[in-house]
Length: 274
Ligand code: MG
Ligand code: MG
Image (tube, rainbow, N blue to C red):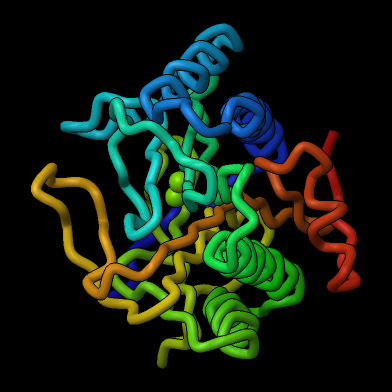
């Protein structure tokens, strides 16, 4: 039987927008600091300071057993990498995931980036992989804007990715509902599944987060009990936004412009509630 989940009111969505914007600010500050020589722990500190200065709480620290503000996953790590003294090198493919809790509501968002300063073919391939992953996120959000049932999103994400190359799409990790808790129902698949999924209706708030590899989709968890690493050692990329469906349209809560630029290529205009 399908679990129930809470549809949000417009006022609740406006509160989630505050959390979404603070999440985005933390990620923007992290992005600005990414260069050769920086450690992922330094990036974590930048994100934590941004969130606390903005009146929020780093919600990843509320996950039992996790003590950091971001996940930083480098090269063959796809998601859930723990910040450490690892020094980033030019050409590394880094995925940064972060969330803020503000006034009881959550944001959750992630981006991938190739550390500047390397113009090798490998660095270029990594950039293309990140671009495909990001594009698939927007394709999924654009599909959500028109979808009747939630699992139309995964069909759009999968098609976008596989039209662009033989990438692996992680199946053990998927997107999720978001609200008062960071991870709630419903699951948001990044690939086609048999079930049509729940109805897409006003108040549905979900985090879409495609995770792709340059090889096979199989992964394992490192000895640190967190880091999700590709089994074949291929590179991983991850992009994520928290999105609200409301009675007038959709709103990308963790994008500063509400999703205007990302959705434009798909002919979708997001509708802010503020
Ligand atoms: Mg996330
Ligand atoms: Mg998430």
